Length: 553
Image (spheres, rainbow, N blue to C red):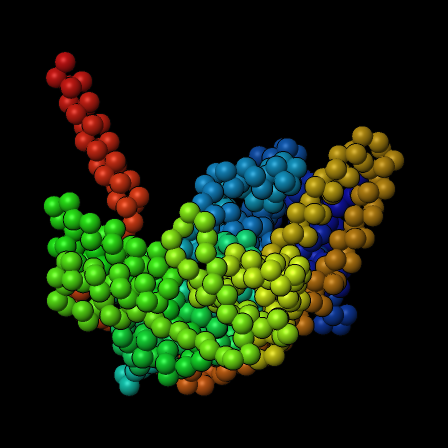
């Protein structure tokens, strides 16, 4: 072991070199070190040791416990990101510390203790409340923008400089929309927070039929002007690309805003919302063994032919004497497609009622069906495939094989609204590199510790490697600092609606605009959710009865 004892007269080129020398000495000796001040010699420009006392008036640490000293404990940025990721995923802090310790090869190699991790999580929570609601929100958006320039957000202020509407979309949302944004659902019926703000979410699904999110917003109200601003901000975040189809709740303000902002987009009503609205508005017709709900479902799902649908619809209205047709008539959608060059086929499915009209041009290999499955789901229906089979077309035309359903759905790169490549998660790459290096280095240390010659080799190479890595890190930190300043000034001026830099905006904003009144609409719970809630109530009552019976007996 090299002699790391300080001596009077020793000189160091930099303060960092002096600190590392003093820190290593404290670790080998068994005491924690601190910085106070330093006298710098003006003639040589170096740091010099002018006094040293080797005696200690306290008990020194053993070699096995030196990792617990304050000067030896430091949490790296990669470790902090891994802790945040695990904590956000619902893993308990104690289990997070155990996992990180095993990855590092033991708690002695981790670099921090469980108390340090607990303090870090508490500090993060406290820091999020320092700047108030509006300041914390804008500060979070700006931090995300610095970490990943593709992060997009927009806020709308009223004449009193209070935040009314908020929209954001991270890099993953932008990438997913570029691949799967041809159709999505827009929903504002989620539960609201204490400020009575509805949460609006743009939801789609990928090539595995898994749910993906394209953007989210907190709205002050559900007016036409608010929805127009939201849809314009959404298109701005995704480079102006408009979807082919969008499904929403039956809301006049949403429909009006869509016709003005996205007139080319096909607007459909979500069947789940239609059913819930039917139960809510016509629930009086479903009592005493009424079959109204069955007939209503048949009108929604059973009839594909327009004339059959209208016949069943009118029969239902007459049977149940429905007088208020303002809500029901809004659910009728008509679509016609006629051409003399197109051949018409009628396809009938066995053991199923109903006929389907398929229009096909064998020359251009274009086809459409009255069921509109391709327009809705992007997949050809069995009726169209049957016509292709009759025409001896064995290969589906490329126009009907959407990229979103292939293995190459997420291949390629995505450009954001300012013309830069979008990367899903910048910090995730850092964590992945950390997880690759950590077990390899642990195995290397374990193997080298068995042989004296190998240990000496690894120790000498490690010192040189540490120096090279620190030099690279210092160069990178200076470059990234300059880039982050440029990104902050650029992002603040382009992403915030009224074009002001983020610093001026934080100083100018007076907070979130408060909304008085009721909480507004809430998401209707499904039958399964209602049954689970009843079971929980029943189990709670049973447990109370059991406890009372134990007390009595």
